Length: 225
Image 1 (cartoon, rainbow, N blue to C red):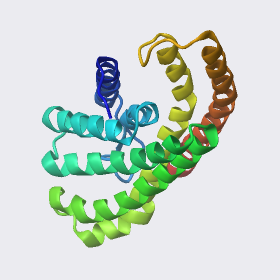
Image 2: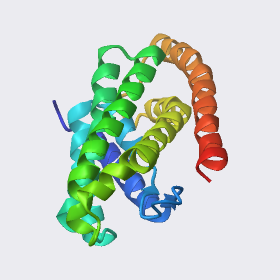
Image 3: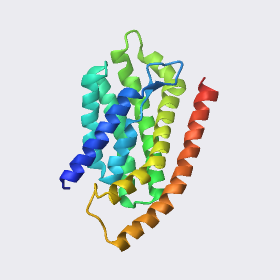
Image 4: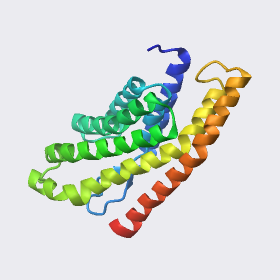
């Protein structure tokens, strides 16, 4: 694993975008638990994993979550641990699976595994951690909230990030490759091959992403409200 200037620059850019979006886009959508907020930072962690690999995505997850802890979070080291674990559980399965074969089916399978892994892990971590930084909230109270609050929140949050990743990943990846930001320019034949792959990946990925996003939004507005 090598860290060239281009790779470091791209990872820094993705981490910066993730942090800025996390600061400005924090949306509560669970009336029973307004302290739970959606943010889109995991999308750009996944992009780092798809572009470079799991280790690179892990690095920017830790750095961004640390920066979040010292700037906007009020839950200290516990909040850092929960944020990092949630992102790691979502991103790393997707990055590992997509690395095996960089095709749309493997991207969908990897992201779906990430959704399941994050949702399951957050059920455990919310049960363990929420009573530690929320005065008056016992584990019995949290246990009652798991199926009706924490499960749907984490499932919907991860699914939205999966949908948005499918919509934006390939267009951004194609732009980065063609501009030479990620690697040296390819030959004409290699560029044509990349264009064909992008053409096959992008439209279907966008359709899947839009459908999944529409389902998530429908659940939020018609079921949870």
